[in-house]
Image (spheres, rainbow, N blue to C red):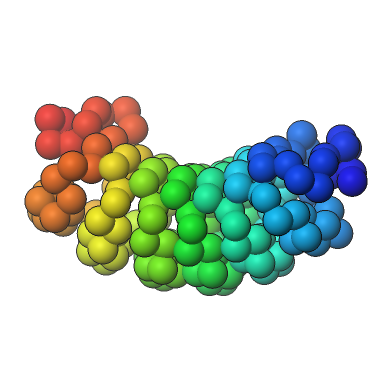
Length: 170
């Protein structure tokens, strides 16, 4: 099968885009029973694409960074309950979109760099008990107190503030 200009085996576990992807190309991935990882970083993904990605329930690793994804599209991610590694940095997802990640109870790494997040998002993230790495922006709208509370609730999670270091050492 063709995806993003290259041949992909139906039984593949990992797929990465080499450029922009179409809705039709993503629809072909829905029938891939072994697909575990999908990298769509800078692939022109929109909210419309996320509706199809939300059907890829075997996914454990997803990167939709540097795309036009918003809170409206993030709601489709709630079906990805096997997700372990998620990168949604440099998208237009806000506090509202972070709430849709609640069902992702297996999350281990989460990259939220350059998202417009407040204390409300940090309270939501505290529910992810398996989280061991969290990457946040160095220009936050959340408070130091909320960050400290998140660290208290997830003491084994490495919280990286890009450009500053690891919390609480910063």
